[in-house]
Length: 329
Ligand code: UFG
Image 1 (cartoon, rainbow, N blue to C red):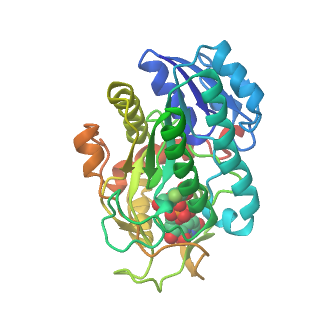
Image 2 (cartoon, rainbow, N blue to C red; image 1 turned 60 degrees about the horizontal axis):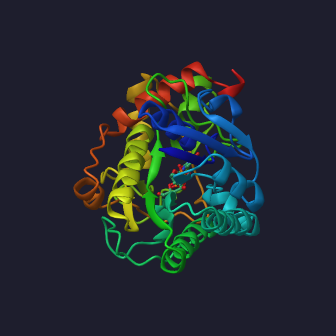
Image 3 (cartoon, helix red, strand yellow; image 1 turned 180 degrees about the horizontal axis):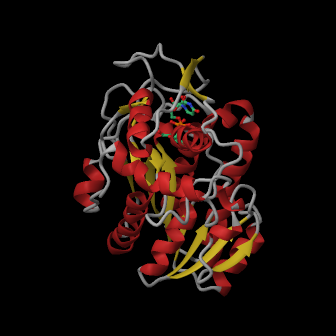
């Protein structure tokens, strides 16, 4: 297939590009490089630099490149930044989705696989979280993703654009050879912050809050290894083309780890004692988010190969050791 990957220079998108190429697809990337890295894009993919909101450019690429399907990784994705700058998130994420779907309609491209998020659920009424749980986001980031899913739903009804929304839990790890990994500036995610502190030995790692309603008081999250996550995208695209039906799937391993447990796992993977302090709560963090991923496992036949926190972190440790300054190394 000829696949347009929007946001293909980002952490998750660039690994999707690699895996789509390896599976024999033609891959075209559109990325504005606001947060992505040109170096992370496999040279076998054709690259366009541009904003998803440039609907004219997107339509032209879809037509000229004879695109069969789109994978969308081009949203802003940091919970704390979205709380501080909500308009930036609604503008980029929601307007970007409207422009993409309009361009897809114009160019008659019918298939979309979308990076959605567990942040759409907000504070869940029950754990583990199934796909039919209420969407009640508690931060602007999660709200934009819920809105984007809703827009996709109506674009299917009116225009026949079929889509699969994949609700990611906490994505972690790197390409297994350690060549592509997480490089955000500023970095806000738990695992990269712990591993950076392990590499630098600066003793600057903080856990945000230990008074949550969880067994050890720190937030519980469900981590999924990034290559496993991308495997699910390939399965989802095949499923979409085969069934011609829109759907939504959770992507998580269904194991919950507290922030303290992740820190312990990092000490074991790195073989280092990593000092930490407990700081105040961070805005927008639900107590616990754990997936019920039965639907992806049964319908898509998805089988994550990394289930434990140490397995998930091993590739990330390779990346951080070899790229202490990210893509500037
Ligand atoms: N945390 C720390 N210290 C840090 C960084 C994070 O204690 O230096 C804590 C956070 O407060 C939270 C946990 O680690 O309790 C995980 O935080 P992350 O920032 O790594 O991830 P989030 O859970 O906020 O969000 C991630 C993705 C979202 C996705 C969400 C779904 O970034 O896109 O998982 O579970 F929606």
